[in-house]
Image 1 (cartoon, one colour):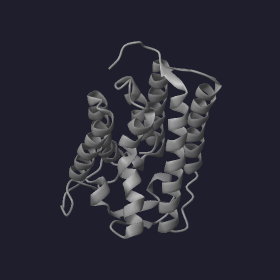
Image 2: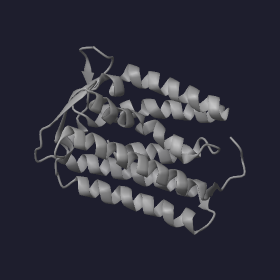
Image 3: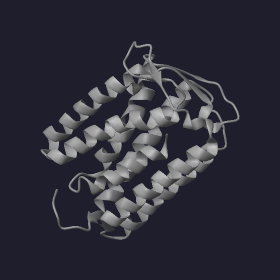
Length: 222
């Protein structure tokens, strides 16, 4: 799952009007932000196996600290608590906490049975939607369309930056997703980890920037 996580982040603005889109998006992406760090530290492991299916070019050997159900619940509680301490926005804290846990749910739908329930456990979950490239693309495209529609309907641009930065971000996500379907494999695990970290940071700064130049359509506070 890739753009599906972004879709949930975009849609969650509808539930937490006062929250910046940046933390709302960090939440469903958090396990994937932690994962490359744990890879570089040697805490988690993966292999680049390649293949014809662009969604199955990586083999996830061990990633219990970033992607197990129990740890994603823990990360969600920690992130939600930290968000509340900084903002005192209770609804936003609940939304970001649940957003973190949503990552496991979506990944368990798409991954092969490699999603751990607990660190060190022997039970793994995965409905393997990735085995079907057309099915995965249809599901993720539908989710992104819904997420973009909900965010766009909920907000309005304050200026040209709010309009073009937002749609530029959407275009970038779509182009990146389409490019990933080419099936190219990264040269090494460390290169993949660093690329993921840098790309994530740039994207989140872009999200924060675009959202700052948009405002909620509704006058209702949440």
